[in-house]
Length: 311
Image (tube, rainbow, N blue to C red; front, side, top):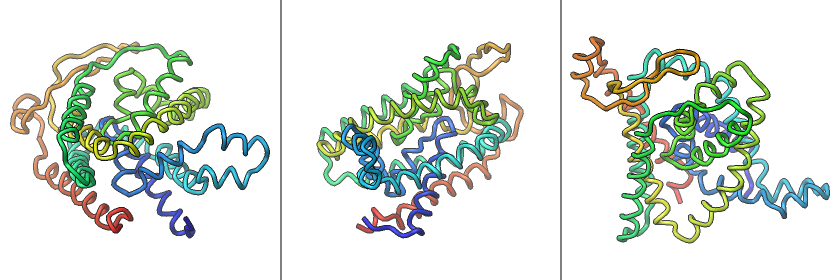
């Protein structure tokens, strides 16, 4: 496939969208990859980093290696993701702390539209596709109600966290950031990114690379052999994840982290009016609905003009 510099700039921008999504617990970078038409190319490109391509690299056949792994595509995407994560980590953290209802409202609309867009890619609805979607909904929902854990900051656990989080990040609807939250590593990793703690970033990054290369092979095989079922499962993941991004919540239980700070452990979704009665705060209903519509329309427009929708 021949691409121009403009094409690679667009790919980098899509990578920035993926990076921004991956910073937010409950939102998946895989979702952005899917709706922007690069998901399956991404999986195939990652999968191509195997023993055969590594042999080319070790034999200094650099041009052949670069072509084999779709290097220009991956480099453009990684640059976009990296720029986004490093530049937006502090901003996203601030917005989630200061304006959670507005941020969650935007992503709620985004995910609803994304689930619809992905489900429309199923070419033939059969019982097994419906079952796969229901299973996806159930798995994602269960993930959202698990209580976050208090865990060690040892390098081995950071490596494991990176591997598990990256697998989630390339699945639409399963948030890598939320997996980190469940593992008790979200704030730790976010702070490391914000303050450029290179040892933490390096160990986490190596774990992510190992997890990514391993999981991409399985996902690529599923998309080839059971395309409709896999798409239905991924769509179900997104629907189930809506439980996490509902904007108005009540804290049910809390826990004290290792720094002595009280944090929310489990929450339940409530209506805006109930939120106002319980918290005494403004539910920001009008702005929340407006932002949800913006998120919804953004995905619909992106899908309309994406390369896949024109095929």
